[in-house]
Image (cartoon, one colour):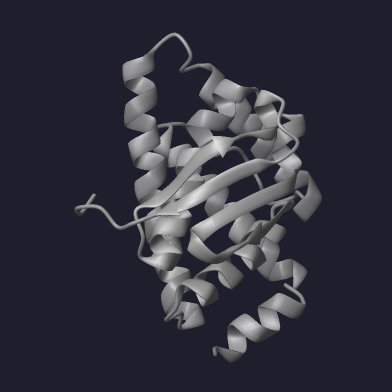
Length: 182
């Protein structure tokens, strides 16, 4: 087991959380082909709220352009997959269980609490973004979730069967088997 993962499970220092939120903001803006807004003076909580509003606005602009949404989702997946791979190396992950523990750490930093079970099932009972996102926004942005898990777990990603933004009590997703190279 990685000492870094063990420590991160206890507490993520605010300066690391802020740095990672800025990275998330930058690669998400890049996927949408938008300029990253000024972030330097924002606290962690302000960054998270700004990110939620930014992604809602960016995803909502795609509603009338389904082909553009598909392209953005592919970019989001690829960016998040690379980010997940970076964390996989950093945390020295070698099992699906360790990958799910790392995902829990990273998601906790952005206000998402989930549990994972055998078979790759993930339940999200609290999601910061559910107060901001419509179901359409959530479907676009969930490409980030799929990519992150694919990078952490060397899997195909995630497939959601329930979403809080669609009126469910919790989000339910399943980690899929690795597909051909994306």
